[in-house]
Image (cartoon, rainbow, N blue to C red):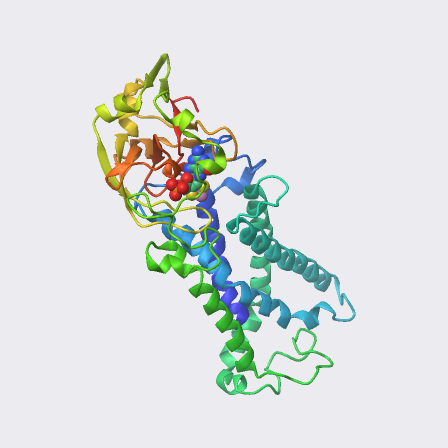
Length: 399
Ligand SMILES: Nc1nc2c(c(=O)[nH]1)N[C@H]1C(S)=C(S)[C@@H](COP(=O)(O)O)O[C@H]1N2
Ligand SMILES: [Mo]
């Protein structure tokens, strides 16, 4: 039963994980992605769409929420197969030896992707180097072993699920199922006295998962549900009150962005081939203003509801840079001096979407310093990390 839950759950995690990687525009390397030697593993990469505008909010919310919810299931599954770890003789045949070797990748890979994933959403950047290549390669190693394992165990799984009598067996802690005994069975050779029924054990796992779900899912919403996200690294609290009171990732202060650099001396550089403009905030407010209702959806799993952003269309700025009706990709740079995410590259489909803005205002007021004053990028369906704050330069076409 645990294996069946993981079969679907881990597949969902793998698919939403790859989608998140595709959404990051890794094709625009090396600005967004420094993963070396992707080679064949980049085969699925495609231009991440801008519709529906809540797409990344959904896929990444699922990835993180389902991942956290599956932790008790994974641990219980590993516990349930513990007797097999000490099976003697360690290898009965070459095939058996190979299968056990693949389990090293399966179990090691699962623990690795879960550990790195949890550390990342908890903002504990203890990795050697960047999280992305570690989690990315870990996921491929794990999933290759997972596919092999699922294929090898499928006949046994089907047999057990078909055999019926599940309800009956759940009620007791005695006796073994049809496939528990024998060389490939999971029955402990010299079991201790049982302390819990099968139903009790499953209840514990399910209860644990439910508890984690109930204390995680709220971070995908604004308002009171966010307060239920007890393990959210941002405390689940909404920052302050007013138009800018929705979740902030890094505050201006934490990355050294102060009023000395965002005040009247600030200029936006808009560059295209053979053309460079320097615009003040007043210049930008003098251009055609548009409004788009879009969320911020972070790779860490949290997201906000739609906020009403207003400012200048990226494609209008591309036109100023010399691209009248064929806006190209753009490199966005922040005035931020330290920390990560100071640069991001956006694809042409993202620049061309009429809802993609260099936002100057949100919810009817000027951007707050923490949300990127004097100007920030906001793009529909894009991961939060591509929505650069405190923008200082847009370079069109040179990617
Ligand atoms: N310059 C800059 N822009 C940035 C970041 C940053 O650290 N520096 N963080 C990014 C990330 S990871 C996210 S999720 C969003 C969060 O936007 P918010 O703080 O306005 O909610 O901003 C993005 N833009
Ligand atoms: Mo983020």
